[in-house]
Amino acid sequence: MLLTVLELIGVVAFAASGAMVGVTKRLDLFGVCLIGVFTAIGGGVLRDVLLGITPPTSLTTWKYFTTALVTSVVVFFAHAAIRKLRREILVLDALGMGLFASSGATIALDVGASNQAAMLIGATAAIGGGVLRDILVNEVPLLLHRDLYAIPALIGSSVVVACAAAGLGSNVGLVIGTVSASVLRVLALWRKWNLPGPRVVD
Image 1 (cartoon, rainbow, N blue to C red):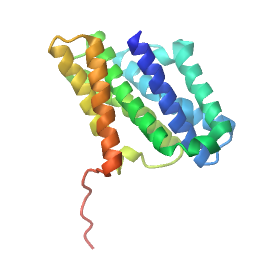
Image 2: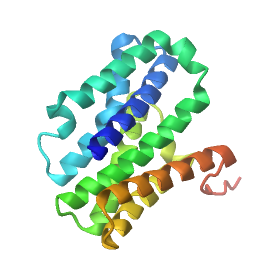
Image 3: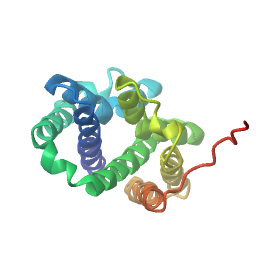
Image 4: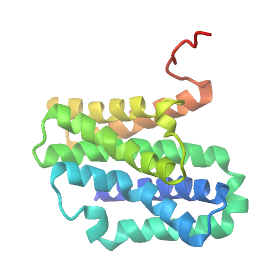
């Protein structure tokens, strides 16, 4: 139950951030909903495909797709008011990233994946939707050129694996992993932390 609730919160957060990108790009209602839904469930679909869970859970149960679609529609019609909540949306996006990283690692461990695979699949679940969003709007994925995003996701999924190895319950790992990844992401946004880029030589 906790895993489902956390994933639905993550779906809302990702769908809202993705739909806002669609609004910024001046897409129509279908385009905004498409971007919102892909951002929300894309990472989960990639996770399930990598784990051999077919068809993906996000496509076989109504709650994930419907939650993402409804959120996207709300953003489309209320984007003027939602745009004023930019900081809150960024925090929600960070929370969604942490949720998907920890839940992705937990699901991977539950189906028998190795520790290394669970860490990488958890991080993929967290960043996959954002990568698909940026590709659809013809942008270089943000995680490749600015902001710490993949690193917090990888840390969050690693914390889940470490908690499982220590014999702690899966719920403990979910909470600690989510908090770790989300807090690090928020700190990176606040302090403008970035990984170093290449020196440009004239």
